[in-house]
Amino acid sequence: MKRFSVSVPSELFYEFEKLIKRVDQDRSKAIQQAMRIYISEYSWKENISDGGGAIVVVYDHEGIEEITDLQHEFRDIINSSLHLHLDEHNCLEILAIRGRVEKIKGLIDKIKICNKVRQIRYAIVELNA
Ligand code: NI
Image 1: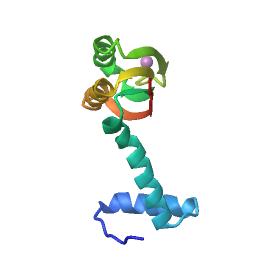
Image 2: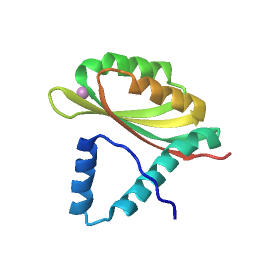
Image 3: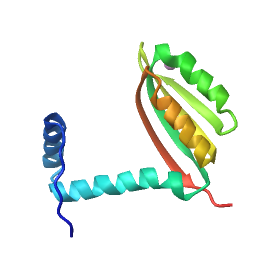
Image 4: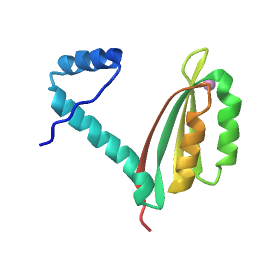
């Protein structure tokens, strides 16, 4: 076992503490779980060349043009998309993805910098030929 200390904003710390108390988990176990999720989320980008999966984006409806433009630009790796109108102002889009990892990473990075994007989550798995 390794012990280490980290610095986090106090609001993040208290939100985290409140949640782990509610789900009755100890802090070390929760951090271990978060680190494993982090590793699985980032390691696919460097270890494999082909991937597939889904990107989920929640964005302000005003950003629809920007999101649609990206879908045209990346049409070779987006196999399908599903649009949900969450409420009057918010949209949720699910993109089914398959292609070169560098290209998928490029799409994710471009979605992240759209200023109408509120949340982005993705699950990409290794696809070995
Ligand atoms: Ni919509």
